[in-house]
Image (cartoon, rainbow over all chains, first blue to last red; front, top):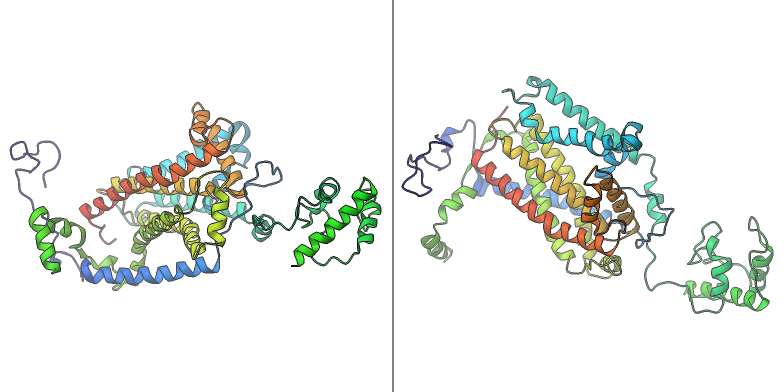
Length: 259
Length: 224
């Protein structure tokens, strides 16, 4: 078929002077057993798609999509991790030759060579042979690239305890806080206890103070002043009245949590 | 009745050639899993498109509730996740679809590569396909920030820090993406939302259209 420069058109139209048929080839011109796309093959495609969709929905139902707590830019302890398909790029930047002074190598040169070669593959691998054994260099490079991406992803993901990570970053339901911040004892709790026992009394460096409290009000007042177990003494420093309000606060929060 | 409607339209805009271009063609034996089961590798491209359609539909429904604003983004996703009927499934499809589309796209790319199907005359279609891969990765990166949870926020911050280190254009690039040279905040969220919902899908649709037109023009590559 004639293409490009030197094409002849009818008048100033887009219709080529040489008429060529755009009608798809006849059945008989294809080797082997062909099948009409519409409707025979499309029906089979839909069946395959339906099976795929069922599998996909099983995945969706078995694993609800995760949501961590609302973004808190002041949370300095948070260890960021990208989505799994960027882990290999992230891991690459941990190598000495791809970080620090060599960061350009890690963020531009190495990924640039990899993805650039992928983009230009038809021109780098321009021999006539299509079978993998006819083009060992292209296939070898691809296998090498694939192996390094898989290895980098694996080394990045393997040491992470995903379940623990999800547990630690569970969202606190808004409006369901059991802590009554207007309680007179909350101020004392905030200054003396919150850093170890958490904003929701859920624990942290110290144990949780809600769920299964066995102490009376007097015992709580005693622990706040004298400590217990590994908790040092003199954590609470304030007036006796504040101490009493603090103990009330902890007991009332427990009662609220039990409801 | 349907035939009459078809004839009425065909009479005016001549849709039969369009119909022939889209659907009236033969599927050769070597790509048909009904004849050779190993031909299932030819399904990966179609399944990628199928997941893209799932992403578009579930994404459209998610935007009915989602609010791209730092006060309400997380709240709206949480509300979606806990209160709205079936929204957990819709968000789950969008979340897992993002991963499945990358897997399927990778499998499709590897199929085309190892079969050498990108060789002449299909070089252009391969390059369009690699561009689609980049756009999908871009959609993954920008979509990650939108729930505005800790994971989203800190991963985006790392991504922007990496972008900042690009020589010469790094800071401009970061400002373009984040809306500010130093702050990752309200502007960043709206920009990522716009990129995720308007810019990249627009690019994706254009590239997909070229991809499919080229396939129909050139036909599927022959057997090895």
